[in-house]
Length: 176
Image 1: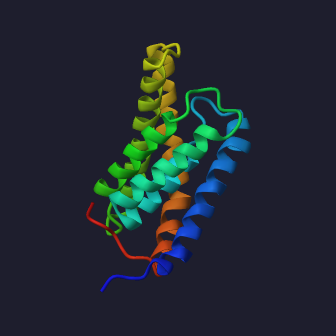
Image 2: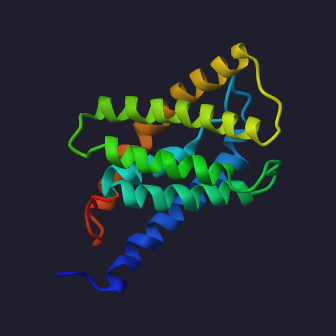
């Protein structure tokens, strides 16, 4: 039996609030911290937590939404759609590779690796659109720091996010 559309509202509102909060924290706080390498990607971690709990379809939708919010949030100085593209693919991948039954350490490594790959993908898309390419040393620093920051943020966000999402009345993981 399928659930009516209004059964999704609490979960959709919760996901929307989580994505907007993650964008605001990433752009307004994490980007200002004097950390080496890449800015910690809280939006990707929230998208991965949702994808692990709900599956690849929900992960792709959340990735597109979170990426578009990042693309449009000031002080965006890049072409709109870059983060949307990268986070859609990352959310879909997290939904396929992640499983709530995986050990927590495995999920942390998965999210960390996805953060590094997303950073490399973003740099690649930016370069293809005309931005200057970083050197190999700078790219290594960016992706390495993104892996570390992603794993640390995932330790706090993924267990709590999957716990909260399991307790909403939205449908569970989807296969698409």
